[in-house]
Image (cartoon, rainbow, N blue to C red; front, side, top):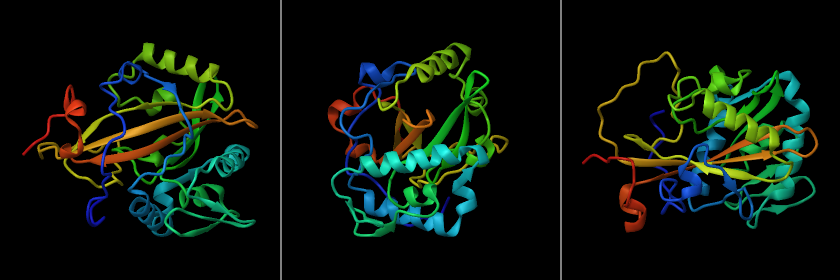
Length: 260
């Protein structure tokens, strides 16, 4: 998506998946320490973009199947109970860290999308696999929610070369065994020529390569089983930094090759 204005960047990257043994292996899930909801120094600018997308392009960033209703309400309760320091709750609204007031009623996914930097994807078990039944996706990294909704994990990851049968089996086994309330997370590292956060891409559309990589995009991906419905939440917090924001230690072993 072009026309997003000046790049929305974090001042630093709090993790490097390539240097942490727990994150480097596939699927590379480690327990969350502290709150799974993250507020960082890009909160105000990321949230301004998220709210604009929700207002102007809701059909692009929101999809919800009918059977997801109880899980979405379960998610609302979990998030409101887990909001970290910086959020102030009243009886009917939340004051966000950027000072914006968000009413807690109405459509749950829209409401949560106006609160959190995380994109929120909900999956339910169906026929031995977990299926994507609802999603709020404002910051896609080269995929579209419309193509993935209603599909199982193996079909969702079909374009990913490393997501073979063995990895799919390990991921599904981990999801099946994850107890309610225990959040796990992993991270990836992607090189992009464009810092735009909203970068949808349909599977059939040829990719345009050749521009030099100037930005490192990392997703902190958290998995949490919801307590009432057993649905799985897949929450994605997106970081975008320039290579000069990495420490010397972080640059060591970085798999991304940056252009001039």
